[in-house]
Length: 154
Image 1 (tube, one colour):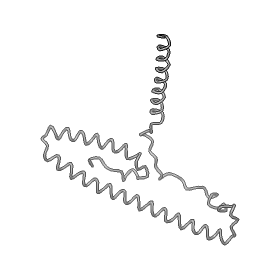
Image 2 (cartoon, rainbow, N blue to C red):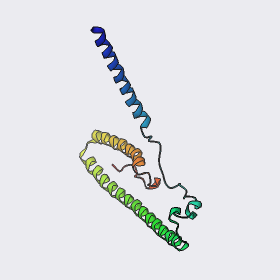
Image 3 (cartoon, rainbow, N blue to C red):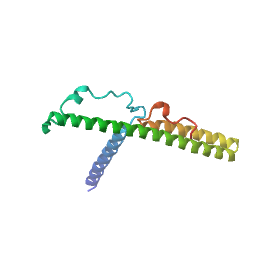
Image 4 (cartoon, one colour):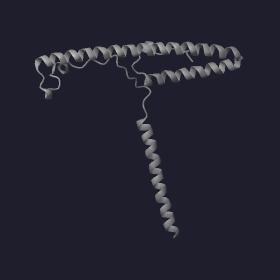
């Protein structure tokens, strides 16, 4: 009876170790890299062959319909580009507003701290800003590098 219990315990332990190793391996394998910065500034436009091929060949559009379709596509593409530019500008404006708020916050907090506390607070702020710089590349990769938040904003 003891051998059966021991064998069952070993079997359960092996399965648990396998699950733990698998979970740890998945965590490290699937972990996103903080060095990978996705930017869309250097992405080339689609090849011209894609733009000149007949749209939806299964629809058998007439020449007039093809011209109208291409006009609609050009108009839609222009609206999308305008919307993306507006979104980028709004994000930059919001970042600037956030920077003003955080600068005011830091000034007020610094006014109530003594020198030792101020040094510790400044250390915390610099570490926080470093983390934000790494995190912002993953959160908002479309933002141009020169428009990213500057140090001293927290």
